[in-house]
Image (spheres, rainbow, N blue to C red):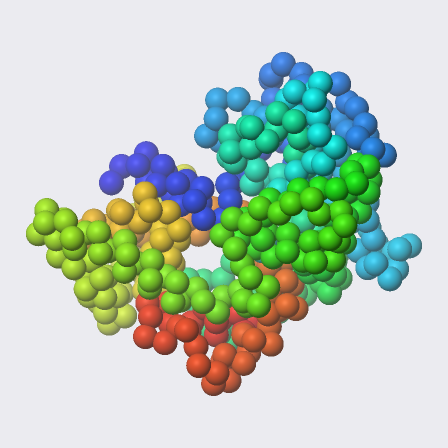
Length: 412
């Protein structure tokens, strides 16, 4: 598999799963709000800086890695108290981007707030690839992007991700290291969905909107639901994409959902005579590969998909399981799994290893681990620990098993 193809595939995975990596390369003197100044973008300046409600915005550009042009926007920050009970204490500068309605003669008063997933994604970084989907809505409505506290440029709480095959004990130690490091500049008690909802309403008031429309994706649907629950009078509408019900604890159904998704995807190969003849039963192939890796993980020489440097590392079951899970979010990428697994069972492991490592790097940059744990451990930690203590788990007899739940519970 060529380096170019590996790069494209890895980007497709990230595109389909957890939002879209923000490839902004700011330089000194550029925008400090997650966009780029027009000088650094090298493009025609956006509309002059203007005000929306009480906020003063400056022209900026949001990078779009799959588009030929950046998205012109207006950017600003809004300081809010980290601890709502201590308004005179430490502040968080919420990073905000405003995409004005394209038909400025007929602008509706209720803007759209886009809420990113994760938890851990930044709205400003995630939005550019989704802009075409908002084309019609943007004709008459502004779009407001607020990096949720702990993500993007809103005091990002990011830490290095753990190893692919880390034990719960190691995961717990990594979480403690992350907590101790971030605790020097943040009070981690105040980076939850409740805090995010309060921030959203603060922004709503600041821009002078009587009502707003919420568009949430994945974890963003939890934020949307909780905003609507707490502020029904100011919620005009909500759109929920890939819904995470409030009664569902994050992580608890991942294993079962993955197996169900794989059964549907692999079933397409089994029903196709040519695919079945060449690749056999993809799930059996995957199980065979994992059994091999658990018994004797091979040392693999592979070319780093980002730098092109040759590296060497043992291919562990966790590498493959993690890659399979991420691929399952996008049918276009998932359709390649039977081919890659068959290739690995023939002794060609370098493709799987290169893609796994590249994906891990992309996700580490896209997700703020500290913020993610602040949300999960505060809101879902009790249910996670209950699963470890013996409550029946949806992960029994699945590819992912209960490892993810055990891992998260140990971190919490």
